[in-house]
Length: 297
Picture 1 (cartoon, rainbow, N blue to C red):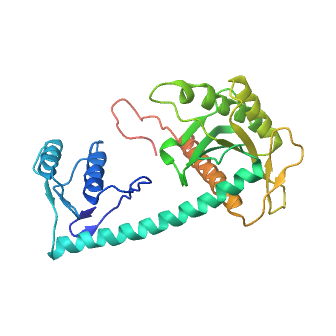
Picture 2: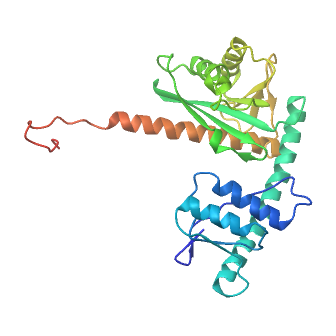
Picture 3: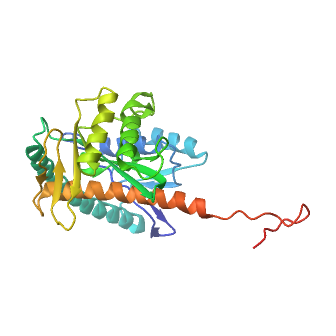
């Protein structure tokens, strides 16, 4: 995205099944998918290649913007240089994407072997609880899917049924709401079922989450707890029905993956908790009188 000659943003798109598809078709499909959403088109769009129904697409974009939109394929000059910059950025983004995909593949294959999963997990959901001395208890759920964190599927929860600091009961409530409520059943709001659920915590939190999943009749999803022992560097994974946790190798791809997901769940929960705590601390001052519009400092 360019404004006033300056690069102000970018969006990367990747296709896993683009073999045999022409550049023209990829460009046209990208434009249609991107601007079919609520995105308002700019006055000018630069493309590396043209395509047969380009005038038709230009007319559609103009109608969407309610003013003229030009779709150009520059071959020289400043606009061509901008296009070259975009293509260089795309090459860098693709290289990084492939690197992340390779690392993720190694991590999930190792995780499958460590946990004895029936299949390589494509979607992982992780839960964390946050509170201060039992007040403003909240929970977070973050999602990892196909090699990346999927922020559009993140969810935050205010704890509704638990008084005080009770992480076990809070975890039970949140897991039950996720897999037994509207996030699991309501059309337009429901989320896909994960291949693996990671609970931030040890045997106690895992047990509470398992009870919640049993209560909603969900036994087919694999679940585990992730925690460190006090003073220990090693991460431990707690599995249902096993008293002894699995100690993860410190620098393995699987360890880095679950740490990244757990740390993101923790960050997301802490951010929400601080927001609620900050709102609760905002003072509300009475007015001096009915004729005054200024708050008492």
